[in-house]
Length: 370
Image (tube, rainbow, N blue to C red):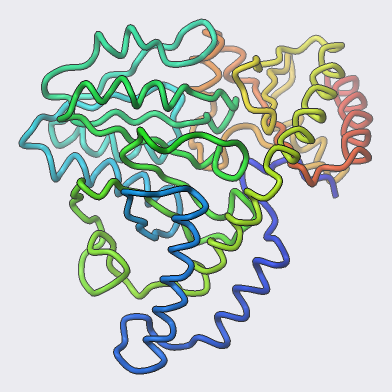
């Protein structure tokens, strides 16, 4: 098997899985219980939380555990909008966001909130001049992903955050799902940050929303004591501890891993440049993703042709419900490219042999189908 869909999800690290199993067996008490087993469980969660705080250098942010990035994004967007709607009902985002951003924003539009989409510059990054033009006195939230999930464009998050400090009534949220554990980005000037464990070799079903301490949210799950007043439910101790472990391991030798992926990406770009396809990639994209648009071949057809050789890629973000990539269209200004794009996503675990096998089968498929 040649797995090249790491941006959709990653295989769980064996050490992380071992931690999950150990915690599941040894710490059976509900962390909210007052008896000895509950107290022991709470201590384990507190230790995991402290580790995350240290790993990410969090000085003034609360960690809210969720089921994943989709819930974190929903809690951030709905939580801010419903809590601070007395300040205004204007939200700004980009055409490069994940569906779990557009979903809650659409929900809020039905409640009377207004939404503007900031323009992109020629590199696919946020046009800061246009962002400044869109800012209003009633703007309460700006949500911009650190890295797009289909093309991999990295936004100047720290620069945007510093700019938004000029608007004290506005909060800045960033979806870090595709950047956490892959590349280093400062969290200092971001008010709310979302990410999910299964994107960096952790287990599915656990994510995080980081929230600045001075911010309040309207919860979307009510009832019952938990690790935070903003998210009710019995704390998932094994998942929380395994997330902490996965994060620590993913940040270990981060530069070395990044350089490995960058090498593989450059090799693929050189190979694919020989074909009559469009490579939707530039120097502002992280190397973990390589988006291309085929000509005269349906993306699903090509995906399944590669699947016959047990090569696994994707057409869009795994959560997308559209037949056309909104992100690719925004990046290329080309509808046809948006309809014919596929995403190859790499890992430091990707081997040279897997790349060679992919190149061989890609050549065979494109000659047969094209």
